[in-house]
Amino acid sequence: MPYQLQLLGSPVLRKKTEPLDLREDRGEIERFLPAMRDILHRREGIGLAGPQANASLRVFLLDADRLPVEGHGVFINPEVSSSGREVYEEEGCLSIPGIFERVKRRECSHVEAYDERGELFSVDLRGLAARAAQHEFDHLEGVLFIDHLSPIIKRMLRKKLREIRAEAEKLGQVG
Ligand SMILES: [Zn+2]
Image 1: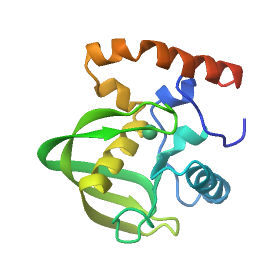
Image 2 (image 1 turned 90 degrees about the horizontal axis):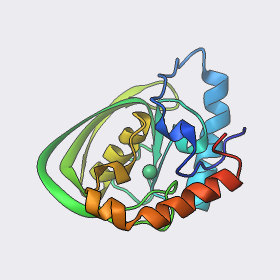
Image 3 (image 1 turned 45 degrees about the vertical axis):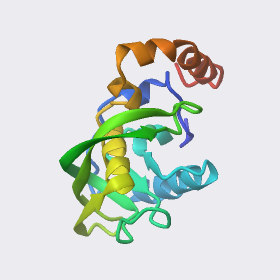
Image 4 (image 1 turned 120 degrees about the horizontal axis):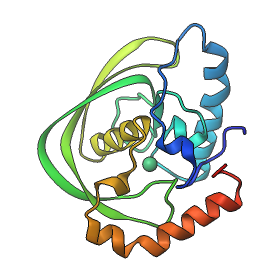
């Protein structure tokens, strides 16, 4: 299937991603980055990870126009280390539409990654940008933000989550 937004229930969202080979995978990188940008902008998200675009690859995007990320929008083979105090803020996910819940994250993230030209860079993020990086990095490990919610909250969301999974099935994403 081409690069389309995957919804909860699509197995690719639960798979740990493979690192990209910046030389060998050049062609694929040039194909999926525009597709990922397209999904991100059309759905008005602030971040998107490879699996969400049906590519089980270690890459995520952050919207450099809306987040203080020092102009870095593409993170290939990223390493994210987080520090600082733990903060609860509301989060959502393009793959789990309509659900917004408070998630505990660290306040700061140090991210090292390659950009689309294959240059290694690092950036220190705070607040929403740090939160977005942690959220997107989770996607590369097959983890979704709802995994961080308490059993009680998850129970309350059960019906809505079921509806999203049914939608994924209708779109032929469940396999
Ligand atoms: Zn997400």
